[in-house]
Image 1 (cartoon, one colour):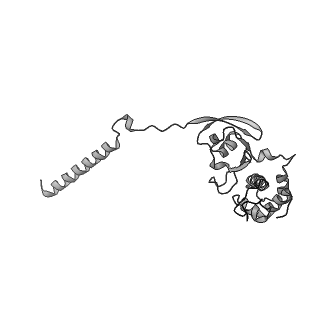
Image 2 (tube, one colour):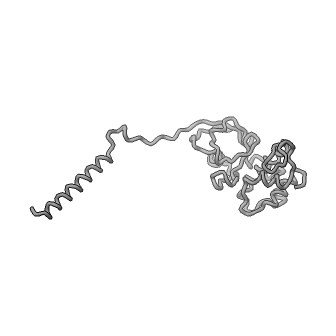
Image 3 (cartoon, one colour):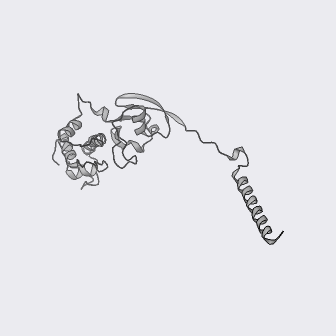
Length: 210
């Protein structure tokens, strides 16, 4: 066997040894070493939505938004960015607004939830809904449910004396001003740019001047 043959054999031996080692490392030592996929857990949750009590069995990872849309078929609340930035999913929980895409459904045991469907209906609109129609506070309408829920909560905040970053005096009752309304509604994005009309609608419902 010449030197070239020795080199060839050595290379073959090396490759065979390497392949065998790699295969051995890829095989778990025993059954316990290979973890089984973790099964999704579910939990019962009961809450009131638009005045009606619901009991659901949900995957614990289900967001409140998905519970409302996929399980209760209340599709008024929209899934926009799904990251809590656009406000299209805004609903009222115990009278306060939240981004339902960022909140797990199982966190709301016993809570009172209001969606756009619970504010009013075509035969009896909520005053804020009627004002949005009157002042054309929407264009494509996708963000409108979240805008209206947020607007209702904003006027409640001002009436309750809760200050915002735009409030000049944190100890005084906030003024109904354009600056206050803009600041408080800044978490709701309207891609169509109907902001001026939204402010007009909110101002009319509040009965003041902004």
